[in-house]
Image (cartoon, rainbow, N blue to C red; front, top):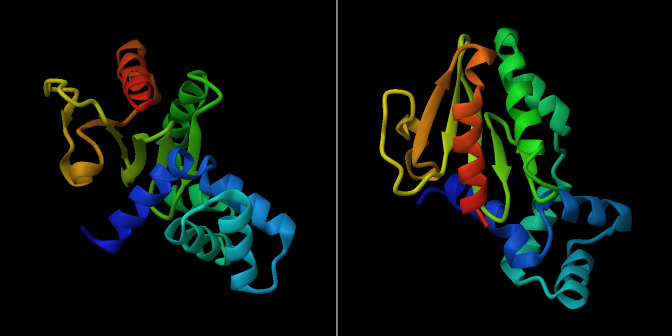
Length: 182
């Protein structure tokens, strides 16, 4: 397992293992404004019972000069502006599933997480978004393809070139992936 994937897994498991998402921890740490790494470690481990590994990861990721989430998404779609309507429609859809959906933009994709990541939105080309889904034991079809470049992060991939493809069938698959991420 490479470090990037291990980190993605850790971030995806963070709500279940620590009680909060990375975004929530980052907000807490930024409000506290700890001057030293050790102070933040003591706070997370002592006051919140966060394990050493998670505490260290939370501190490092929250301290990084992180690009804002909006900037991360904007950067993903530079030169791919035609895909923004598809992205916006997918985000609007997953937000209807419940308050427990976390949308986590990263450098090249956006993770959609409940207790576990259940979807991944990635602008694959200038004309296509790849939507990765975790749908264990779901058969592969012409539209619901194998995970392709997502590897084990997702079980399936749907290639989207138009916002009209965010239809009732796709909504059912996304909702099923959300429900399985409980």
